[in-house]
Structures are given as C-alpha cells and as structure tokens.
Length: 113
Image (cartoon, rainbow, N blue to C red; front, side, top):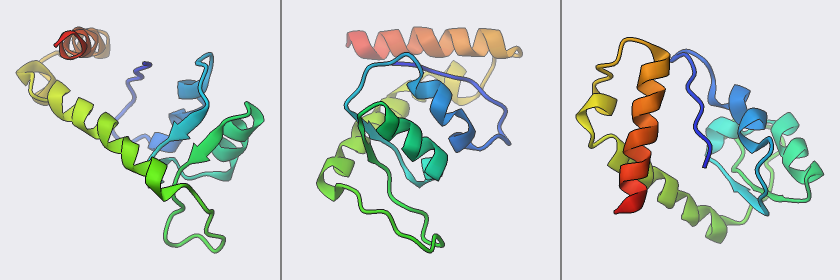
C-alpha cells in the first residue's frame, strides 16, 4: 500500500503515476477521478490492466471490466475505517508530516484487526 498526502485542492489524477511507481501490480482499479489517457497509458506500459471508468463528458468512452471494478469497494471500506479515528477525521495534526504519520499508524491498526 502506498499513501500520498497532497493539498486539498490538488486533483487525484495528478498523483496517479506516483502511486503506481515502484509497486508491482497486474490490475489498477480506480474511480473516475483517475481517468486520464496519460495514466492509463502508464498502467498499460507496465503490462497491467486499467480498470478505470471514463468521465461521463469524455467523447471516447473507454471499456473497462465492470465486474472487477466492484472490488474498488475494498479501498472505500478501508478509508471508512481509517476515518473512524478521530485524529484523521478532524485532522488535529497541524503539519502534513504529523498528519501523514498518524494516517500510517491508523492504517497499521486497521490492517492488524
């Protein structure tokens, strides 16, 4: 698992290539926020399958495995569990470094359960 902390106004897709960098995978499952030709090309260049639905306003709708896309709920449930920790949900930490550190701690606690 890889976690990156960005500014709130930064688009998800801008971090897509950094997230897959150095991580072995066969399938990349993401929501519409990660729909970009550049990211899909980067995923395919690594020999993996991109399971990312196209934005509704895109002229060329890309086909994706809808059955496999249902597995994205695992990530959504993980983030729901992480946000149960009050320090994460309310962002008590003032610095990005400390906030990301607590997200790592909360992630470990969730994964150990």
